Every structure is written in structure tokens, then in C-alpha cells.
Image (cartoon, rainbow, N blue to C red; front, side, top):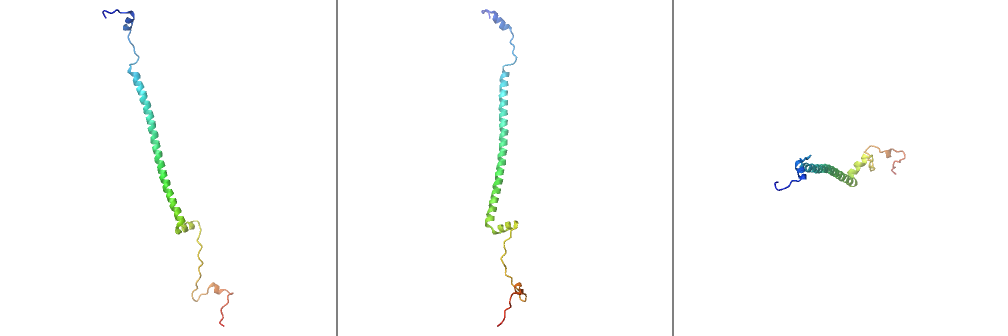
Length: 128
């Protein structure tokens, strides 16, 4: 500083102590912290939503499988109700329906009289 003239303004600058309220890195650190916090919050929320949707997807797949199995069972039951006489008869009995019985002719045993033979309106054959 020998050959240089010192001005009054220069003295004021040099003599005035520089006071900084915070270091230069604090605003950068605060900005980075804010960005990281926002990013973490968004990612965690998205991750939680993804897990919820995956759980719902699994539940729906299980319900679809269950309904498919039930549907196949009903289709099989329909087939048997249409085509299997034993199944038809079993279901009819369940609802109180009875298959009409064939008329059986009563065979009389030797020495027993049939109801028709007991009737008085019937004539006995005569030997002429």
C-alpha cells in the first residue's frame, strides 16, 4: 500500500467489520433440506398408495378366482340337472315331487281271492 493513496471511503470499508448473520452455506443447506424433505414425502406417499393398490389387486384376484370356481361348480350342477336322471330325481324329491308309479297288476296267490273276485257284481262262469 505504499504507492497507493488511501481514500476516505477505503478506510471506512477496511475499518468496518463485516458482520454476517449466517454463513453462506446455510441457505444452500436449507434449500437442499427442503427439496429432500419434499421428495421423501412424495415418494413415501406414492409407495404407500402402491402398497394399498397391490393389496386391493390381490384381494380382487382372490375374489375372481373364487367366483370362477363357483361358476364352474354351478355350470357342472346345471349340466347334471339337465342330463343325469339320478340328479333330477334327487332334486325332485328334495322339493317334494314324486315320480308317478307304474300301475302294478296284482297277482293273486293260489287260494286267495282278489278284490275284483270278491265283488258281487261279477258273475261266476257257468259250464254249459
